[in-house]
Length: 164
Image (cartoon, rainbow, N blue to C red; front, top):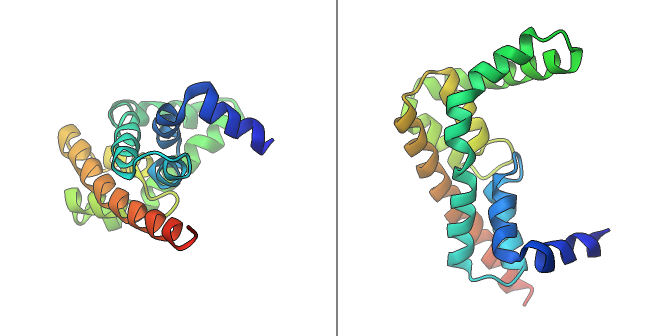
């Protein structure tokens, strides 16, 4: 299975597109895409650029559509969709107070923390729910991703140097 995934990433779509696509996936985002790019032998700076770019692609769509989507899910008669909508509302509300108090910088700091579920997807979700202005939210997520990207890149390059 691992060999099939590796073959698909390196031969199927190529390492550059693999990093870009991987960074768009929720939870994995830039935090998983950078180690992937370094592992695939890409230049660290190119990997960082691809990961930030890929991670930013979903942000405008999330900001523009997430409230409608979550509302639709929560009102759905399909139990799974209701649960999913309620989960997203709880997730946004859980982080709301911490982030709302600091607005732009709260979102940027939240996104900058290189842990699972603190990336641009969740930052965009919370930004939409606290009604942060669109361009302010986009810029805030970008600032957070740049910081997170440098942290993850530093850790990844450092660890790979230890094992080389």
